[in-house]
Image (tube, rainbow, N blue to C red; front, side, top):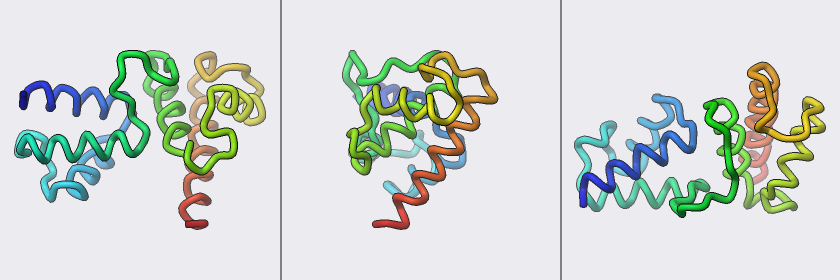
Length: 134
């Protein structure tokens, strides 16, 4: 069971496009450990629950179909993390409209790396504003 939980944890990290430092900080915040190798099954479940709280979906069919590029996955991950704060509830149509306003591209999967970075920075700024409101 522990192997499956570890695999799910690493899949969640990849899906959420977390950088190493952010991932380690999340592990430490939830469990007090900085390495998944050191975690018990209960701690692994706690970390997975935190990923789900942040918007990760374990389901076979995901809410958004992100491309294979890490920068595009990060756009989807940040957008999903904002869904509780957005009037459009983080819908795919809402993300498309946001990307269209930011860089003039109709779908996040068609972003080039420079456009994706611009969208990511705009989403991060939105996250900071949302945190300041709460």
